[in-house]
Amino acid sequence: MSDAVTPSPPPSDKFNWLLMAPTLIFDVALPIILFNVLTAYHVSVLWALVIGGASPALNNLRVWFRTGHLEPLGIIIVTFLAIGAVTSLISGNVLFVLVKESFLTGTFGLICLASLLTSRPLLFVILRQFVAGDDKARGEWWNGLWQFENFRKGIRFVTAIWGVVYLLEAFIRVGLALTLTPAEVVNISPFMGFGALIALIVFTRRYMLYVRDRGQRAQQAAQTT
Image (cartoon, rainbow, N blue to C red; front, side):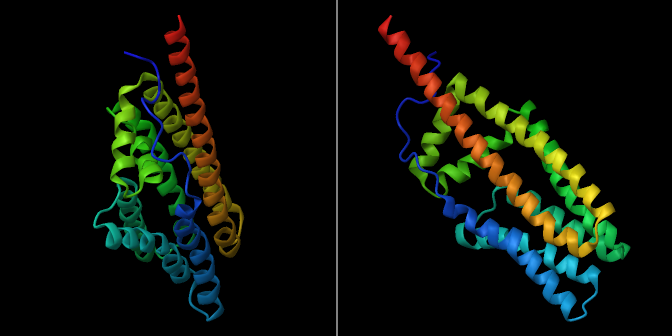
């Protein structure tokens, strides 16, 4: 089998950064705004944290209403947010509310690493959503890439990187929760999470383009010999 990465150019090589706008709004801006507004009106820190932390779930519900389905990552996030909110209110512990974010990111990191043992790693599904969205043609093109060895290796490598980064982020979040005030954590944590996501996306895009170009060069070299 050829080691080329792609049999033909994708329907479009451009990444639509507007896809990140909902993440920026729901996962970064809203938690900070809600926490500061609620605490300014003397809502308890615990309730402000719980309400502000629910905003990422709104983004997943938005996707569900728009497309009629939830991606695996969305299901994971909604499930852990619901469990975290309930246990936070039961425990009544502000520190627990702050630390529960690390459970989510840490678990996601572990899921990424565990998915390396499956037929198709988690990043294959997540990246397909970024690359194809609801475009069936691009989705079919993306699925077809799995037949190429370079592509499979590239996906497994970036999945491992995502898993390690999110495990490290989980430990950093715990450190922030133990050393900073709740307000400081709320104002820093979303930017840290969004920054890590952007860095991973940029790295993943550049690495997968490198893998594709390397495969195409290998294919061209084989054709000339």
